Image (cartoon, rainbow, N blue to C red; front, side, top):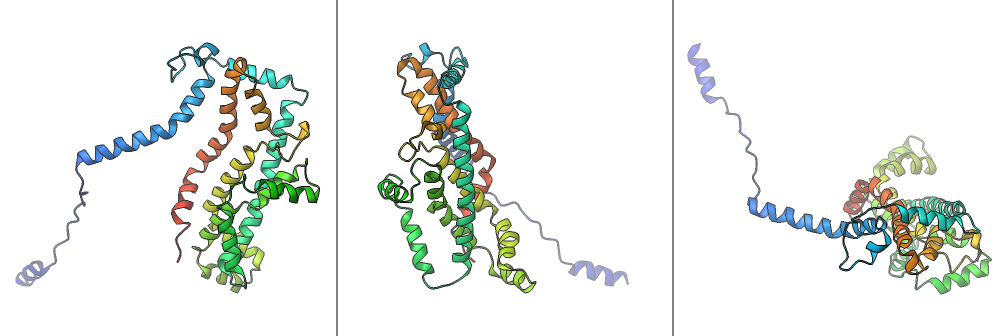
Length: 299
């Protein structure tokens, strides 16, 4: 019996020892990579740091030569002077904010609905002209807003939408970048999920709302960020003429054109304009990275 046990122990396979795989680069290589990434991060953050520090500088430090990156005597007088200047306008400051928030919210919501529904049809169904339509969308990505301003103005004028909110809201519905992102991301969604939901009795709308949209959340969050940045920074001076319908960016840029006396307020304007897109980007950063990494992948 003891001989048998001994024999079994002799032939018992030994447990494999998993060794941690070491990278092929040296510590010096790691330090070089980290140093390079820190340099790139500093280059990316420097414009934001300089804009914020300029907004906190008194007027004499703004014209100091050579310029200092950080303020020596930081102050918030530039922001308080900005609000005082805006308060003297015959159109209240809250009116400019309301115009911008309203157009940004409605334009982004409409773009989200139209782009996601159209992308779902193109990504999961075949119909005559589907490929041609998507080629038109990708072609539209090559044209900036400056190229299409004249034809857009002629169309909006024909519709009677000049000097109305719709002149900015409706064109935002057809923003091609959001449509492209949604379509590419939805192509990675397995068609088996859609077919299984239909077998269970779900209609097209329920499949879209309960199956497709929750699974492509990174894509539509990214699309929302692009749309908000595009609408928030709109001056709308070409399509809107009434002062009570002007956007916040337009009003703030009028303050910037006040000359040397308003240089501090102009620095504060830069921070006010960029703070909303930056906050939205920070809150959804992980979703953007996931979308960019997988929007070109397919099953």
